[in-house]
Length: 291
Image 1 (cartoon, rainbow, N blue to C red):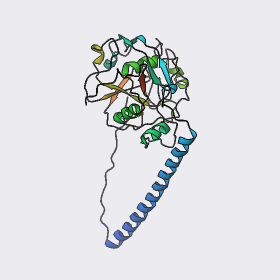
Image 2: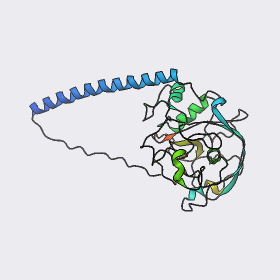
Image 3: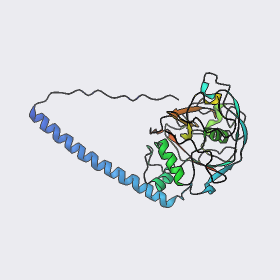
Image 4: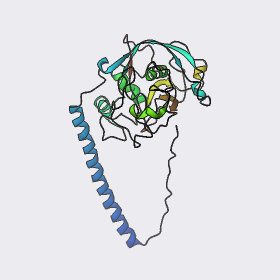
């Protein structure tokens, strides 16, 4: 995934006489006061929209009724197609226990209801994914509801939904518009969850809209010695894995095998999440808690 570098403009000081400086200071003070008023009104507007949303939209994610039961099984994880993407190799067989997975990405209205804040950039869209959420905040949200973040293996298994083609919808990326918000149709922003077609498991937005945090630490070589049963990632690491591609993604990042990473304390407008839950209620596949 390509990252845009931040550009910090240089500031140049100019000399000015005292009269000009006083006038300039008055202008700056007036501009600051006006800006604060506008910002205050904007905050009130956002909070009002979210309050209306909490009343108007039924909250999801309170129990397993808004989750999809994903029957466990075996699948081939990873890829041999993009050999230069070494973190997707080797192709290997993985077996998973059954689990529940949120039908859609966690929305801003749901996140606001439980966490009492909304860090999202696109924050005038209450049914859009909650984004700019750190890995720690995503984990805390899921745990508050008696859930957890999915493992990387669970996410890939659920995204593929039994498909053996290059993409869940077929061999070519041409049909992506019906299934995902991506670089070619998103207008570079998130969109309301659940507007695109569900995959064969009944899950929406597993591809595109936002990349999603999973529980695993990231290791590009993990597949070389990954357990064959219920893998939950390395025991330690610097980064956490993200999966699924997002609204800025091209065809390669939309592949169900595509992997990427991010520091767990970073906020990114293209990263959201969804929660998982064990069928038996015990989170036996919880990611390692070491930091």
